[in-house]
Length: 114
Image 1 (spheres, one colour):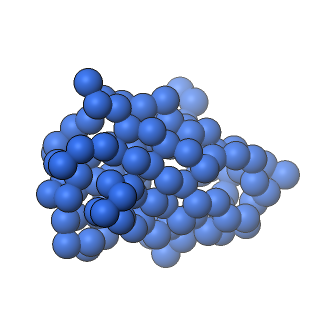
Image 2: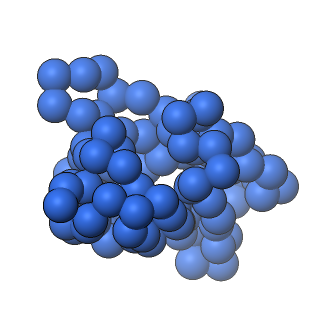
């Protein structure tokens, strides 16, 4: 019953930046493709960025060029740097493996508003 823990969300103005962090404990981390997901009010959870065990990233079109995902296998942590934030990025952000799953965490809320 290992759960991920996300942090780093908050309120930011349009055009601002945030850096999200997530720890996913356990030895599986180093072989897992890790992802950042988000769920906006009234919408389904969507995968916005992922990074494989070789640190090759992949992004949804909606965040490409603005978000950067990275990982630190020694710490079992994955990060999401979000630049040029838009109001439509407002959501609860979650991390988890894409294929190998941990129990979902509480997420971290990101609000982009002036």
